[in-house]
Length: 299
Length: 165
Image (cartoon, rainbow over all chains, first blue to last red):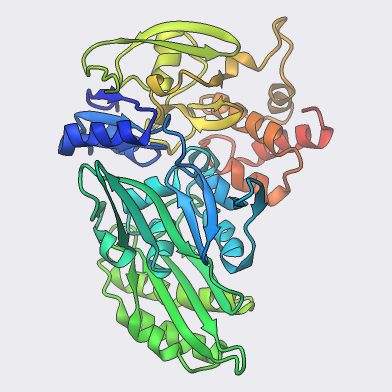
């Protein structure tokens, strides 16, 4: 179908954008890459009165590292995270190494299809808040921080508070998500990401991300994070399964036990893409595979 | 204050398509796909699902394959757009991809073909060294209900292997 009518403005600065959001409030919707919003508008599931297009705003598409944190500009497109590069303080561009540098391309390849990835943006995906979206799961698992601006103010929202329910975030109508901060994960971290969908490029039925920090001396797990999407209105962490990993040494038996705990910890609702029991099974499989992937095993 | 275009008024839009300039008037809600078909008369770009799933409307924007049903014409003013009409040479000589789709039976009914051709042109130009698995993954962006895809993969592969880009 065709979208309902809307008024349109395309500011070329952040200030202009905040101005428009302040003026139009709830009537306005921010358009970034449009790969989620425009389908919803074409279906008329979304009928914003005013579209504030941030495609011309400069300064929102940078990536940089400082103090162990990767800052991803809201307008960075998915395809750039298939081979992430960061700007250095002296103005050069270098590829992002380390554990996060290896993980982002793995995750990025699950996001939609090629034509979606070249237009859709990281910040757009986060602000859209689909509970099965890869970047939302990653943000929740790594305790990302969302940087939001409004006229005359800035605030940082932790991932745990940011995602409220399906397609709903803590962002106020007059706020603009400008960047997301992610921990770069030191060399003592092991991370994995696995998802299952019926067809390549679809949203996941269930996706899981895991990250564990190993004690350098003993190889035991000092800290564990398990995040799952597709089982609730927001991406969820699984603290009981995480706790089972801490203090233990990674291995197939431990991974299976943690995956079992994860399957017991989620409370999915069945829909046409999969029953509750099926989703629970998928959680078990995706968590086990993600842990194995992080540990460098095949599965 | 940045200018606001009213919802119910057509605004002047300049599209650069296949090297030609089109001066059209479009409501903000006009998608690029509809603008190409209705306002520019370039009906080679097809519309299937109108929500970004089927890929029939794929065109190149600044050299990259995008869904033209998920862009508005008003967003498309400072970019170079290429559609299936721009593939063949002015004298009608087919583009190597068109030639290959014909030779390898990469089409049957033809509805999805413009989208597949533009997707493939984008792949050919941005990733000429693409591997088999990546190619299949990239071609999985679009839907075809006739061929079963293998002949489409064969078509694009033959052009990549010939290095005709």
